[in-house]
Amino acid sequence: MTSPTPNQKSVSQILGELAGAASLCWMPRPIGVFDSTTASKFVDDATKEVEAVLEAERKVVSDLHQKLDMLRDIVHDDVPHQYQTRLLEALKQ
Image 1 (cartoon, rainbow, N blue to C red):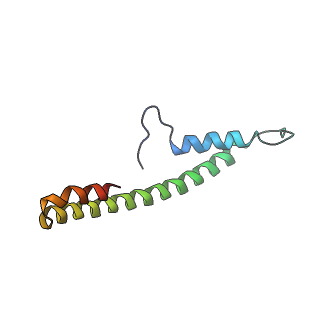
Image 2: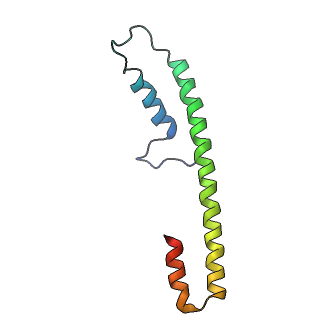
Image 3: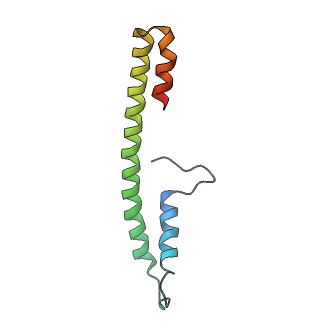
């Protein structure tokens, strides 16, 4: 998991704020005690799921970067210089 920058919220903080905000969406608003322990468990479970998705996406991006590096090596070694720039620009898109 990557740590948020100083001005960036963590996934857990975003989901926690969402849970609190969603609890106010009822009309009429419920009365009684908000079970923050149960809400916190929901947030923890959701955070784990979101972080697993993010980790899988990071792996896909990492794999794509490796393939791009391999293509750059191939382009550099086997393609005449006049075509290298155009191929590298096409790979960036």
